[in-house]
Every structure is written in structure tokens, then in C-alpha cells.
Length: 233
Ligand SMILES: Nc1ncnc2c1ncn2[C@@H]1O[C@H](COP(=O)(O)OP(=O)(O)OP(=O)(O)O)[C@@H](O)[C@H]1O
Ligand SMILES: [Mg+2]
Image (tube, helix red, strand yellow):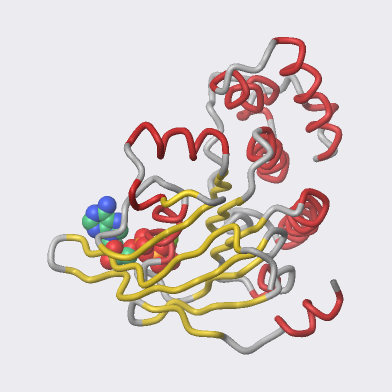
């Protein structure tokens, strides 16, 4: 078993008196894609927030790329979010006043890359997501699929070890959603990025090696296409 990029051990998280995560365990290796399914309100996004250093567990351990997230200071978590983990959202979360190019450049500016590097990296990323022709468009001028390609380019810009995706095709029609899934699978393979993908879509589970179900605050192995997909890769 290759060394885990993300390791979640016995994580608990409550809001007020409501226990949401009640002993979650999960390991993800480099390049491994895991789908997270389960009913609304079960805590899928809460788990992504803990794995991405946006929120903290009440109990349990989270290792990401060799660091103990649950013990890091706010500054440490901020560095993790800037350098190690990226998130892709259902509604893209692009900055509306910036062009596609500027949205992708943004995280690179935060980590202090040089202008020359930022320009070169951004142009390569737009080629990778096949959107070079829309690089100077604003979000409101783009389709949902185009906006998600920009969001994927932005997510890739920092060369993350882990990408968290919360319903990345939830706002797209099925053809566009399938193209985005294919792109997510390709970039994860090419760069060996681990992915935790929350989805209600059967199609999205098909690009994943394993499918886990969040139920009653824990993760359960879910049957399905996982073994078949694993055999393919
Ligand atoms: N910041 C918060 N403060 C208080 N309660 C919260 C907070 N975030 C989430 N919750 C509650 O925790 C529970 C789990 O929410 P979460 O968003 O993780 O569910 P989910 O599985 O992602 O649902 P969905 O499929 O609808 O996105 C819900 O009952 C929600 O109301
Ligand atoms: Mg959610």
C-alpha cells in the first residue's frame, strides 16, 4: 500500500448539540479517487471542510501530505490551503470581477510566484483544460462547463497533492458533466493528485476507484463500479 496523502482517523465533529461526524476513518493514496455519496445533511461537506483545513475536527487526527492538520495553527492551515489542497465547487466560485486568466493567476500571486512564472504557468493550464480561447473572458461571459474548466485550472495552479470536489457536475447538463468528469480523471492521473469527490451522480462515481457512503456519521464501503474502475487503471 503506497503511503497515504490524506489520512483521517476517528474524526468527530458536532455543531451545537448535533453530532455530524462520529468516528470517520479514511485513507487516500496519491492519484487515488474516492467518491463520497450519501443523503443530504449527512456531513459530506463537513468532512471535506475538515480535510481541506477550512474547519477543524472536535476529535481525531487528520494527516495531509505529512502534516497534522488538527494540530496546525491558523497560519499553518492557511498555508495548507494555499499550497497543498484545492477545492472545486458545484457553483464554480470564480471571482466575478476577474477574467478567467486572473482567476487562475490569483492563487499563484498569493504564494508569491514571479510574474514571468505566473504568466507561463497560467497559459499552460489553460491549454491543459482546453480553454485557451476563453482566457480573457469574464465568468458572466462563460458557460457553466467553461467556468468549471477555469475552476479546475485554478485548482491545479498550485500543483496540489489533494483536490476536494463538492458536486463538481451538479450544475451541469449530462454531456458537459461527462466532459468535466473526463477532465478531472485525466488531470488526477497525469499529476497523481488524490481526489475526494462528493456526488449524487452515478456517472461521477465511475471515475473513482472506491465509493464510500456517509451514513450515521461514519463512512461505509459502498458496492458498485469501484473494483471495475480500479482494474482498468
Ligand atoms: N457551519 C455550520 N454550523 C452549524 N451547522 C452546520 C454547519 N455546517 C453544516 N451544518 C449542519 O451539519 C449537517 C451536515 O451538513 P453538511 O453540509 O456537511 O451535509 P452534506 O452531506 O454535505 O449535505 P448536502 O448533500 O445537502 O450538501 C447538517 O445538518 C447541517 O445543517
Ligand atoms: Mg454538501
